[in-house]
Length: 231
Image 1 (tube, one colour):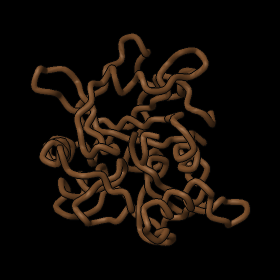
Image 2 (cartoon, rainbow, N blue to C red):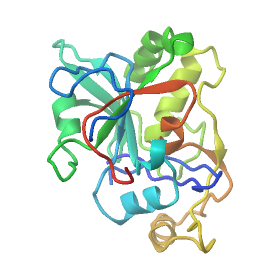
Image 3 (cartoon, rainbow, N blue to C red):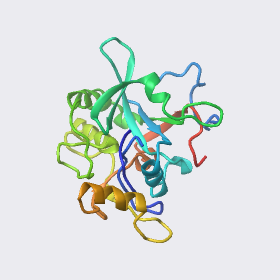
Image 4 (cartoon, one colour):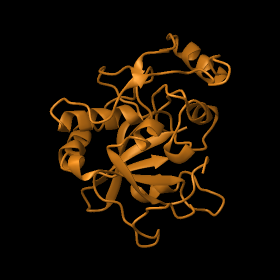
């Protein structure tokens, strides 16, 4: 599980949340021999229910990909790669193989795409990863409010890279939306979610989502494990 968020597919942004390939042009390695680097961003298309669908319905990913989650690659204490992520249980470290096993395309490959900071920003990754490790155990941000010491998936990425860049954002916030792009009506999944929380829908509040991160000019897509929906 990861974030629940929303961004208008035509220019409005949202937050990335709840856990709910064909070879990509420009990928640098084949799936069998590819291993992500520490600091890489794993963008994931999850198929875990209506909220994941709701995220994807109101957000836009790289080349139309329907991403609903994102995590950061790190190295665990045993030397194996893990993914630092904000999920419903809070900020945690998940084994890479477990992360990749959550959702698959028609060919049985993980619906995960790898983004890497471009050279001008790559020097930030060690400090960003260390900051994410320091946030392990922090609670999940169910209301998607920036700056409340709780984190949804893409907020975690936003905050740790902002920290690494001495408080200057690397990724951009934009007004969130939880409305269907064609009708402008709040999606039922979001209406029910916030009603259950007893919280107002944060329509128009600043936020971020996995799709927006995937389209950021600060990263390059270096690998596709499989084919996310939308490609």
